[in-house]
Length: 208
Image: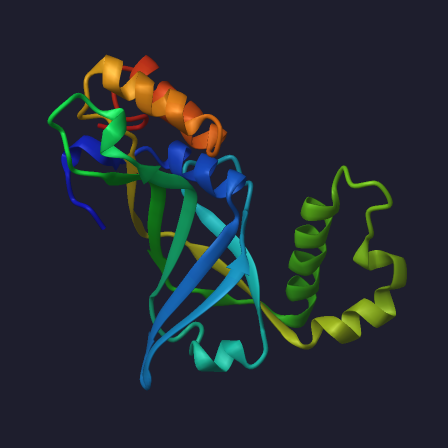
């Protein structure tokens, strides 16, 4: 990950905000046979504390491929991102870039038992079905969904460290950064809003 201090985010609340808005994550494990990567949704375990705790599940046999619970894993969460053309910059500035919000999180997963695994699956479903017309609930047919749940393995990840970068044109002048936001609005409105939020806050949100 880019190490520049201009873009570093150290506030867990900002990382939690990113995860809540963009819950599709990449899980990377350094297993005894090499690197393994999988992609699954994650939820924040709300406990009112500052620490970051993730809940998720993997389909079997991914739990064995990842050797879950035996070592530290890396979870990558990416937010809005997009190409930034140098044509949006001042004359003579010719180098393009890519604006993005990204967090890398590390921890050793706790593998959940059958009952807690089912509860996590219910929470995941309830979270993503919430507000949808005709939204479904796993508990509507508990016997059938419990059978399906046996093909998954739930996990809890207490994040022990993280690195986060919000690269949002912080090194550009206010006029250029506003032009970047304006150009992004049509194709990446969420990213445009983040560029403006950084500028309004006087720097990178959560930067210490």
